[in-house]
Length: 258
Image 1 (cartoon, rainbow, N blue to C red):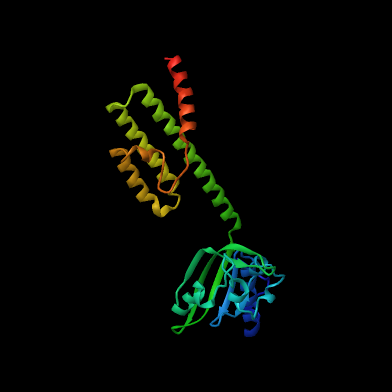
Image 2: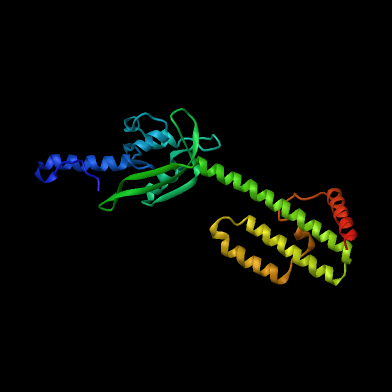
């Protein structure tokens, strides 16, 4: 438990209150997250050290008395102005609702921006919203990691489709295009679609739907052989010459070893 080393039982009421406020201030300044409190007009009434640090200010005192939206949220990520009336925090304040966003940017003192995740919770007294507490964190490193993950997933998906295309072509040249080949091709197509679903279903909200579709695809096969190489909107994969050259080389090697 945080203690200042002073026995508050022997202090006058005013000093006890000051001691309590000091403890709260110390706890808030120890938080890694930025914490700000504003009144009904958006004027900053409190800011901890993390808020000042993340926004590029030397002290929380530089934030006090300033409008938070004009200070940190005045411009969208595309550089266009962000009117106060369109700000989710302002809208939530008007409705007395909490707000959580992770797809916007805040602006530092030096004019640079950073991707932010923020939460806003209204302060209500006697049924009336009198202010809000806003907490936020800089998610630059998280956004960078997510971008790298997307690139990696796209590369894995591309390579998997290429491999399935090679396998399908080898099978066509080896066993012909009869019923056995069609069944085999349909199974490959289903696997390709499952892999595509997995690559595009990192978000938990799509997990159940992805599993349902995967099970259906594996049970029934693919709708067409074109599903094997492409997902909607995709243009990746081998061109015909590249695929045929690699298939011919692999197929020739396979025949020599049969």
